[in-house]
Amino acid sequence: MNLLRSLVPPALRPVARRARAVLRGLAPVHHAGPFPPADLRAAVRPVRALPPLEAGRAFEVALSVTNHSPRAVGPNGPCPVGVRLAWRSYAGEPVAAADGFAPLPRPLWPGEELARRFTFPAPAALGDYRATFALAQKGGPDFEPVGPPAVLDLAVSHPLDGGFNYHDIYGRADLNRDFWTASGPPSRAEFERLAPVKLQLLTDRGLTPDGRILDVGCGTGLLATAAERFLSDRGAYFGTDLAPEAVAFCKGRYRRPNFRFAVNGMTTVPVRGERFDAITFFSVFTHTYPDETALLLAEAARLLAPGGFVFADAFTSPLVQRHAGSRYAVEVNREALLRLAGLSGLTAERVVDSPWNGPARREFFAFRRG
Ligand SMILES: C[S@@+](CC[C@H](N)C(=O)[O-])C[C@H]1O[C@@H](n2cnc3c(N)ncnc32)[C@H](O)[C@@H]1O
Image 1: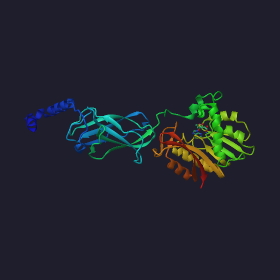
Image 2: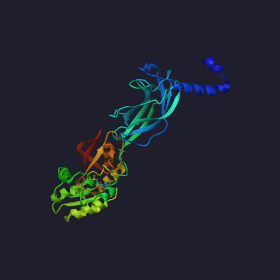
Image 3: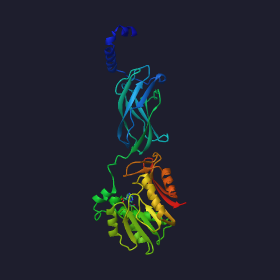
Image 4: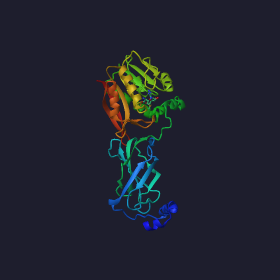
């Protein structure tokens, strides 16, 4: 072969090399069965980092792949060669997401490098993942990596981002006709069923009819509905919400003199000189990012009466390092959330834990001082 090569005049050698590459690309490389693993080596390198992926959707990743094996490998036959993607959590733990496999687009000869975009499905569960890419034969082991393994830290977020915000939701709703759907419950019956359930979570922690409730993110008054019947004239209810439409609706609907409503900022509650026995954030931290949640918890700590408690739910996931998802549904890391509460001197007791989405849970916490 070398003798043949040396017969080619130097001026024609680049042309001969190109012709050889074309002929190799055309030659079928058919893998009828698994290779002996011993001599399979390859280098895989990500060409660039990726923005957050959309949960459950296909995504493309640009990779450079070099075949360091003594044999040609390719995408044909029952045991094709391609890039395998293995998912781990950000902490390196195994996860439920299945490995991905994308066949090579064409044969790759010994020593040859190829740069291409490969397509894989993203995991269905939101989170912060560590993805490792390796050349592999389908159903067989990974090729031994030459150089560092190809690892990318990939955030998986929510596909329903689309600028979700409550101003738009309440703005579009006709609250005189349907005041429940905009704040969550799919029917009036469900809105009314949930009202005493949420109140009970507070009375179980010691709220009495003479108690003072601050309901941040009151929506269209799910808790107010139950509190209207429960609180005595000595008790008090203060509902605040980001959405002026929801606050205007509540002012018109819940008319007892000890019931008040006000618009609040994303991270500020417009109350001074008062303290509350129960401060609630029902389905609020499910829409706020950790820094906002921390500031709202600081507001709650400022307004909490001695012996009082803060009650809040959040979507938590062990796959999430800090937060994942969009305002539509924010998932957080439980320990990170509890650390943020600790910054305001609040310690948490988990009260309810229910399934949410994949490994994510919906957890309800009662926070107290100390
Ligand atoms: C899913 S609804 C829940 C309403 C009510 N708490 C309930 O349990 O039915 C979420 C509410 O939180 C409000 N919200 C979201 N972020 C907020 C924030 N930073 N401060 C106050 N309200 C907020 C929204 O406008 C919306 O009314």
